[in-house]
Amino acid sequence: MIRSIGAVITGYAVMAILVMLGFGLIKQFVPDAFPTPEAFPSTGMSLTIIGFGLIAALAGGYVAAWIAGKKKLRHGVFLGAVVLVMGIISVIVSPVTQPLWYNISIILSGVIGVILGAILRKEAVQE
Image (cartoon, rainbow, N blue to C red; front, side, top):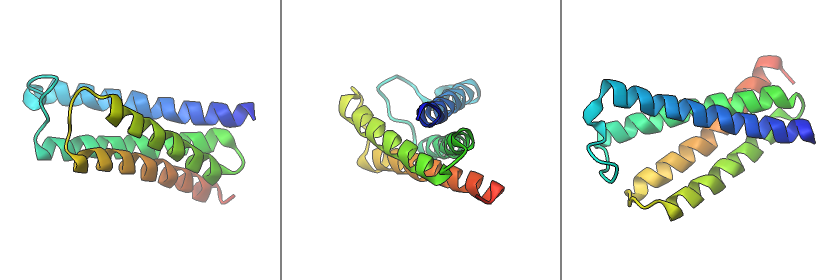
């Protein structure tokens, strides 16, 4: 049980760290991407952010399944549920209003990404 909880927490932490690194890279190489904290980025930049999120989710799901050891896909699905709940909470409490398509895309790419990451790990070790 402790290993399962640790796997999900670590997977989520990996996602969060990679997302922060992605935003750091964007701010470093495209300084005008976020003119103000309240401004919504361009469509191209929004798609880039979603792409970074998907890569982070794949990594998080992979790591969660790797740490879990057994029942890798189940841990990926549970992490996906955590990502879904945290995404919904983030949309509700965010002071910035973003387009619906963006919010849905961010949440779905996270949920699908962590599950795909767990599947990749499961297939890599042929459980």
